[in-house]
Image (tube, rainbow, N blue to C red; front, side):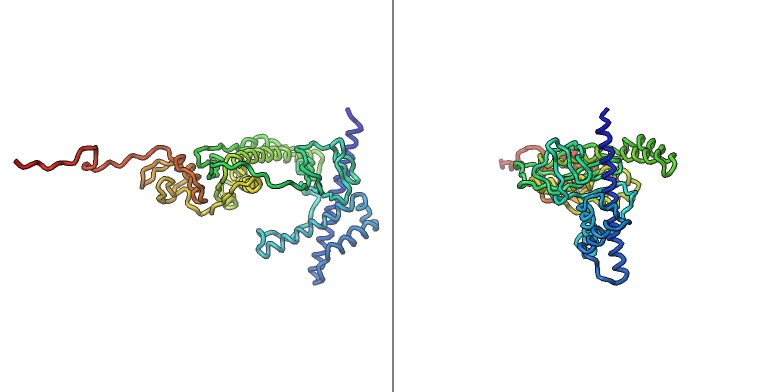
Length: 400
């Protein structure tokens, strides 16, 4: 057993915990200073003033002397995070982004903690592949990929499951454009099938949360029996968090694989803008969150922009389930239990989901065929007696 290595890891976890705590304290102090100024009608304190008062001068006082145990860059980045929170809040009031609440105080009970190091902190990657951080040491890293260029910033994150991640900011080269293809696709997202494609393909829903419910229930039951504020309760909480993390990781991996495959095989993709928040207020809420439609659509959108594909999002009020993709006649709304229906105009028997996917593509202006939506051809309309067959036209009887 590597006793020295284990001791180093314990010390590094303690150093990271100090960094998380100091960044949180500076953030809360700056938020408190600005809220106090607002209540008293005083000018809004600027970042430079707060940095001098809450970091430089505070480190010289006995009450905040422990701020000197971490890198000053980490504390300054915490102030910039507060600036970004205020900027996002004011932009939401102006309608420049979705509505957001005012910045709130951070607590040590937050399950996610993060600190950011810029080049001023003199962090580096060693020849052995370790991450060297100021006042923390050489942290061993399991690299998921090779960095495309020299990073400028690294953010160290500790999630609710007690795992540590390093996220880098790098410059990438020009956009990689995939070879053009003639395939265009419409996608209808659902619960019984995660995605139904306009070419007739149905992708089953993995239901990661549903499959893990038994294990999660057991872990949460063990957590509820632990004494509050005890070491055993904290261990049980982490076990629950790790179980949820496994579910989230599996769902994210599924989304990445599927979105990458669709982007590679199709030149244009159309998706319906679903009202996820509305569906999440129904009895289907757990299944809706388990599917993760919004995360999947976001992946398809940014990968389309990255690889030179076309992405179209049609309106949620488009009657994709009411229109026959064969003849275009609107046949009215149908209950959810009806999975196939017959068009009253052309008599074609249609699969509800595939028909909706074809209509999604058509609403986006994509050139797709409606053949995939057809379950079987409708019964032909009998011809008139005079038009049936290939009998010759009657000839006049010659006069005798």
